[in-house]
Image (cartoon, rainbow, N blue to C red):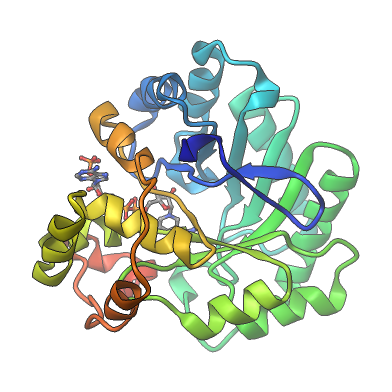
Length: 288
Ligand SMILES: NC(=O)c1ccc[n+]([C@@H]2O[C@H](COP(=O)([O-])OP(=O)(O)OC[C@H]3O[C@@H](n4cnc5c(N)ncnc54)[C@H](OP(=O)(O)O)[C@@H]3O)[C@@H](O)[C@H]2O)c1
């Protein structure tokens, strides 16, 4: 069963191959979602300081009754934090909010604050400061792994040049129709695991006729096809849902997409409209 399979990070730590995304799951609903996911067999949960549900996720972990060591919990250092001192206190705050002795992985949410996302200022110095704080928390045993998110090649290089601990993952937008192949290749060549966020395009792939038809051919749902696509490219999918039926469906991905169909999926016209979520910086929107 896919939920039991793991990737091995560069530091030897095992990370379950499918993680539950929790963006837009309200804090009050997060504990139940996490407990349901763990009951179904999920062992990997992805949250962030910015999601404002770390507290609920922590409660869900305790509620699940599974040994802490069996779970892999990721959170993200807020994108706006670009100084060493602020990063140190934010790391400690996440431990406190979640009520955990250690966090499995903490990653820098974005190289730029959201209001400057994908802009010209790369915040190189600020990212090195935030990274130093993560390295120290890692060395101190507060974090079992550390990494990046939304980092382009130049942003990754900036960290690699200055680091004593190499980033173990880069979590990026990657789904059928919108897979940044060059960045994925570059990142994997550095022995950095690529995590694919929004693997179902935030739900938009459900509306794509070509994808719907191919899913029918395999007798699977569009989310299953989307998750399998990401796995076959060596990435780690983070599908989000609080619905136990969807959780089960998304974990049931023990089938193989043929090379021919993978090529077809790689070349599907890029989805640019993410519906209501199009205002989010990660989907091309701009914050004031
Ligand atoms: N690092 C970053 O900057 C960043 C950015 C975006 C996302 N992320 C991470 O990636 C995770 C996933 O991304 P996402 O939340 O944008 O969206 P997603 O996982 O691509 O898609 C979620 C949507 O798909 C639906 N869905 C999921 N499984 C389904 C199923 N089996 N059948 C039918 N519908 C299904 C969900 O509906 P229901 O909820 O009704 O099931 C929801 O509408 C986030 O939660 C977060 O952890 C990270």
